[in-house]
Image (cartoon, rainbow, N blue to C red; front, side, top):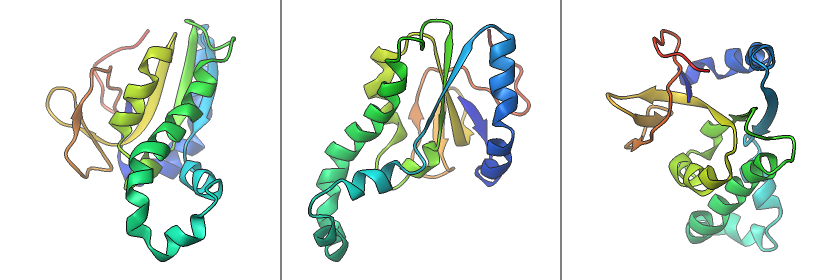
Length: 158
């Protein structure tokens, strides 16, 4: 988890090439997944989307089941690439765009079995004591066993 202040989203994206270069210099291949537009793409694929705009409360059940699976599948497609092996870094951007539609914890739980190398989640939020992560500094967090990487991180990665 690369944890950063939510206000730094644009600055982080402007510097993502530095993460890619560092990964390649460490002899890891680099693959990106961006969920920023996942909700819009999913919503555009729904046949009766106009009805949901007139009654958005009816959308909640579909969000809880279908959208969570859709977001996970976007990540799985990259994780399943033949070249995304145990020496790979799959970088997940756009986690903040899940907020309000599904929980990042649910999406990550669905993709965990597919991870062969490293999944790096660029996470706008913070980590409380221990391994409790809070997306966009909101909502109750969830406990997730991951190596946190922060601006002032003492923890190293390999």
